[in-house]
Image (cartoon, rainbow, N blue to C red):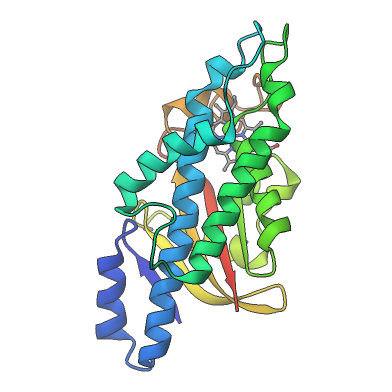
Length: 254
Ligand code: HEC
């Protein structure tokens, strides 16, 4: 069954579930609602942590070096505050769905470990641009998350196929289809999320795609002129503000 959710709005999801999907049993409804919530919360914590890395680029790229204090806990403390504003709960709380708690805790561990692993890069003297950009941070966190709990869930930041820089970010067949036919189509409402029961490899899964659009801060690298080499060494995509630039893909395995 396919679901289309407006602007992270769980209200819209409930409505569709109760009015539309008469075939769903109560238990299936409960578990899909929980799945969606968990998927969106994983996307949310990743985004908030990634935003901290974005806001700290000047510090990261300061060639002065020395301990900059950019630890995982530093990142998580700021990310947590923003997360609470968006989700109205802490990342971890009493009474939380146990699988969600496991997954969010694993994501937090991944964030701490990625920051720990990159201290030498971040603090090194004499190097201005470190290449520790938000997308790299997010990819490393998702890779670590996969090592920790990849038998339960997979989080990936992907993009429309023609925009993908790192091959590891290439969308799979299912993602490619939904991105091309729906998220990237003219009439797909901005910020609407796509969620469905779908196979992940040969496993059944609940899969959620959260679109992300280029904002002003992205165009220095992903904007124009198309083909010009950006500060990271990649050719720019010629993207415009508001274009679909990426997709956070969350798969909760059954
Ligand atoms: C400083 C240059 C820079 C800026 C600014 C930047 N990116 Fe990127 N982006 C990169 C690089 C480099 C990669 C490849 C990262 C890797 O190796 O995984 C990337 C990868 C991505 C990916 C993952 C898919 C892929 O192509 O590998 C997405 C999605 C993405 N960027 C979206 C954005 C968005 C949205 C913004 C603005 C909010 C943004 N980027 C800002 C440099 C940048």
